[in-house]
Image (cartoon, rainbow, N blue to C red):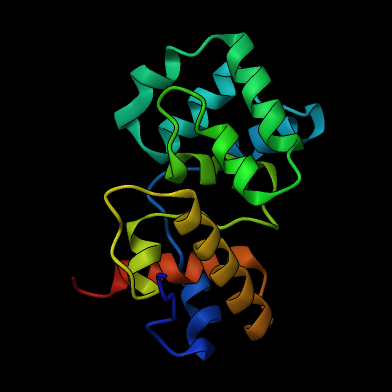
Length: 171
């Protein structure tokens, strides 16, 4: 079982989060997530937008999904009541794996989800796996939620802090 633990003092979270600087603008993604949460699903163009924001490598695969598939699959995922089902359902889409699905969940529910990636994992003492299993995702999610609750910060503040810590720490 992976053990996720902060690789820096918890009292650094607020400062790190305040310095957070991501190279890609996310305001359009935030708006798309708000719309998806209200509508109950992502449209294909918004799915492509967020997936491209997370990683441009899968744009062609993501664009191969139909509008109907994008709406159905994301609708099922956003309505799911447990985390494994929510993530597993998102992965039905072409070009969507756990890291991209975590971004889709974050933008729809920004108070509930972190975005998983190499930097975040590094700041929690883990290497990115070759394959992101549902078990790995739920353990990461549970660990982030527990750390955020223990420290008394929103999950997005923690998410920004762990990403920023990795960015500022030489590899």
